[in-house]
Image 1 (spheres, one colour):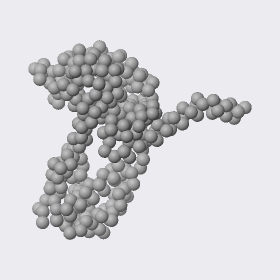
Image 2 (cartoon, rainbow, N blue to C red):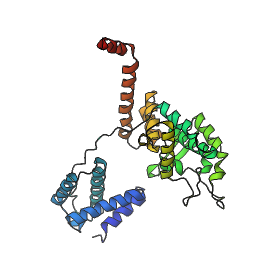
Image 3 (cartoon, one colour):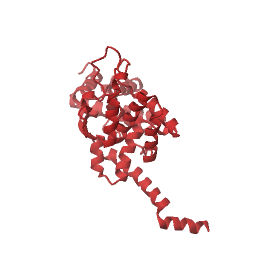
Image 4 (tube, rainbow, N blue to C red):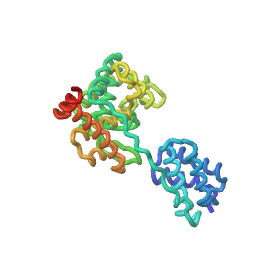
Length: 305
C-alpha cells in the first residue's frame, strides 16, 4: 500500500500530464478537504463517504467551475489509485460529474478594440508604444496573457507572420500576426531597451521589465488595460487580457471563420470549449440583423405607429 498516495498522484500529474503549479496546488487542497471531511485514510473511503462529501460540496454554494474542479480532482485521484493497485475498486465511479453552467464569455466590439488602441497612445511615448503592442498582439493572435508576457524576444526578431507558442500541456501551436500587430512590434522593439533593468543585458523576454521576474506581470498587464479602458470611455470591468482573447475568437466567427480553425488558433484541446463562441457570435449577428435589416426596421416602424 502506498505511504502517500496523494503525493504520488500529484507527482504523476506533474510529470505525465504537465499540470501547472496552480492546478497541483488546487488538486492537493481538494484532496485535503476530502480527507478532513471523511477521514484521513483516503484509501479506506467508499461510495457512501464520497456521496456525503459531494452533497456537502453542493450545499456550500460554490461556483460551478469550483465544483467541477473538485469532482475532477477526486475522480482522477481514485482512478489513479486503482490503476496503481492501491485500491481494488474505484469509489468515485458512480459519482456524476458536476453540470458545468454555460457562461457566455465577455467580449468587446471591434470599435471598442480600436478605442483601446487609441487610448493607449495617451500614455508617455515609450509606454504608449508598449501598450499598443500588447493590445495588438493579444487581439491579433488570441494568445493567453501568460503566453504573451512570456514571449521570448527571439520569437519576433525576424518579423514573422506567425508565432510558435507553447500553450497548456506543453502543446505547440501557430498563432497569426496581422500587419498591424507586426508594425506595432517593430515600433516597440525600438524602445524595448528602456524597460530593461540596468545590468540585465541578457534579458530574453519581449516584454522585459525591471521587476524581479524580468518580464511584465499578468497583473500589470491587467492594470494597463484598465487605464486604457478608462481613457477610452469603456467600463474597465468589461476589459481584460482574456476579454481580448474572447473578442479575437468571436470576431473571427462573425467574419465566417471555420470553428475548427478557431479551435486550433486558441489552443483548445476540445472543440466544445470553442463552441461557446458560436453562441456569442450568433447573438451578435441576430442583434445586427434586428437592428439593420429593412424588414426588421419596417416592423419596428409599424409597431411605433
